[in-house]
Length: 380
Image (cartoon, rainbow, N blue to C red; front, side, top):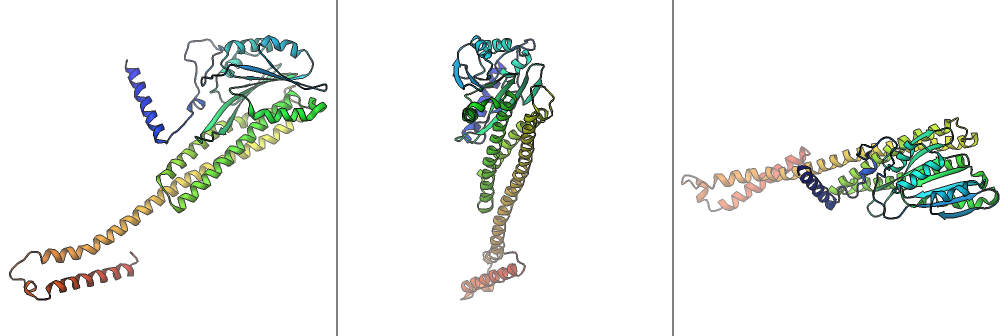
């Protein structure tokens, strides 16, 4: 019973934070590695990720010297006649929740069970593994959600064989539609899109998307910086924290991606040709540039937080300075009013005809002298 009460309290706290807009839409399940929680043997395929409403679908793009075909298939068995055509095959699988389909796919292509387990677990980090007849690669795509401005992470698993490439996606692969258009534009020369080159093209699109993400974050940080200089507010602190958190997320994705691309450019696997290694070397430089940009933006975000705290502190000091000056001006006025408020009979000024005017004259002179003194000391 206690765990249930604790879970309800935790859920209420999260809902309260979401309503405040401070951590709106954080997708932590993409960054915290998780297991099924069951005592299952290694290699057991179980979907771990956000529930998906759409069913798993498969699409095959066949291309070569003759023609380019794109068609949907319903079962894994329908892939057998397609693989025997001699053309290159790009098999796109959307939706990872169909465990039976993934198991059948692994059996057909003789994919290691541990790899199939990784495919179904969407919290895995980018990785690469080489086998005798195929190469297994895990990538992560990142993009900014237009409404919540949060980073959306999607896992992309790629299996490269001799005449085929299998890409497995959580959602429809809209990102790779331009790649299909390039294959179609190639016409009879589409056969240059060998599986290893197609893997490079997929990695290139994913990494180019990183540049777009960082450009977006960079513009946001510049906007926050301008606001900090002109009129800092409490919302700036939240935006700085949010940007910094997004950069940490991006860093956690890009660092292992660098290792993946580095292994691909230096791989001696027969499925990777020398021609493709040169391309992987090129995008490896891009990943290094992205990491350097992330580090620079993180430093800038930290400096912005320091600038915000310094600005708020200076603003508070200015307020306290003004209040202190007012308090200092009222001290002699309070003293004089207290002295002549005692109403002793022996005080000669109490019977003076111009006592009231004289009192205010003395007060005004004292205030003017104090203001001149403050100005001389540059306190005001």
